Amino acid sequence: MTTKPRQAMPSLDPARVQNASPASGPRDRASPGTSSAALEATPGQSTGRDENMAESTHRQALPGFRWDAVELLAYKPEGAAPFKDITRQLLFRTEGLACELRYFEVAAGGHSTLERHEHEHAVMVLNGSGRCLVGDRIHDLQPFDLVTIPAMTWHQFRASGSAPFGFLCMVNVERDRPQLPDESALNALRLDADIADFIRA
Ligand code: MN
Image (cartoon, rainbow, N blue to C red; front, side):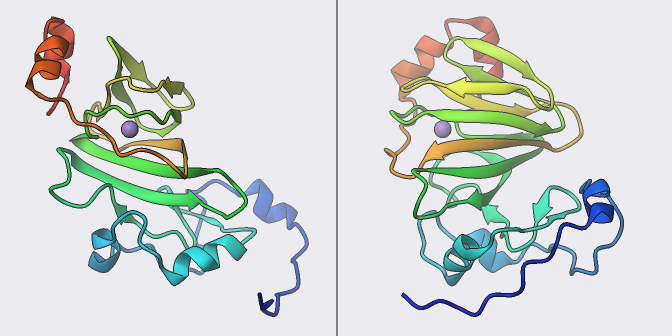
């Protein structure tokens, strides 16, 4: 394994730390764009970016819940499962961690896939407001709320209101493929009128 030359580690700049809000002024960086190539990337695809990411010890926050050197990705490959208006950013995935941390953002009117799987999710809301189904409960979500998705529990996130709804989601790197509800699972969920009204499948 070769070691790349490292930049000198900058000392902590108090002015920047005080000014660390993502909405703080210009930072002399290109504004984040959505390249169509990035949006077409599929999960698990190996790119040079992942290797670079593993070597970065600090990536600055950018305006609008973007981060330096973090690509804006498609939530899932188009057609893989039902979802609407949601993006994914892979914030942390390193060889030494068994988990990865993603930031998902659901646009107004959008939703994640209604699914279940053996792996669990640990979620923290960061932005906007939304609702989520976890098992037989629907929760209203605000920034910094925490949501645990247990194994084999139906779950779905939807944006509320007109602002984007963003949340962090921690998940095992090694994980099973999500299951989609078949007709009988959907019928069972729809026995509850509130859940019937909520779910998008
Ligand atoms: Mn899931």
